[in-house]
Image (cartoon, rainbow, N blue to C red; front, side):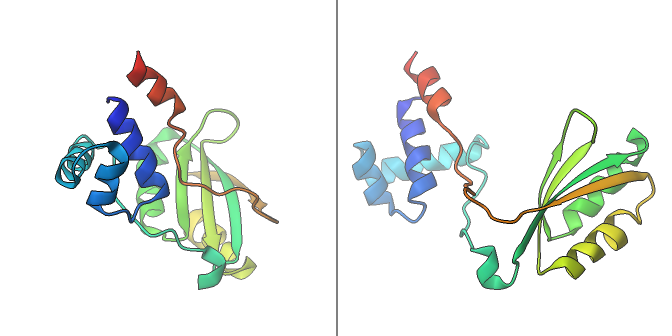
Length: 157
């Protein structure tokens, strides 16, 4: 990636609806050249897609929680990960080091929804050893933006 790739990524993270001509103007190139650059970033898998950022509370998903989950054996991993992919309440799933195997970020309507997710959907799976849940009281920062500082430094070397 070069400096213009980093600039394009940064601009798209903050102005995802910018037109090709606007993006080109900010990058110092034509709109079609900017569109081609973004297309190449998509082909390389650097840009995974585009989406609208929705306020969860405004659509009835007022509860955010983190569920730390441990599996009994690695042989249970495949079934667990398939279930995770099918559950829309699970926004993120991270395989971790430490006491637990996975950390899940979930958004639900409320406590009864969270209870169903944990006890019916997750704990019912073979091999789920334990879960530990932390309910979020208030969120101070929630950003999908990736810190591009390190990538920018690499591009300038």
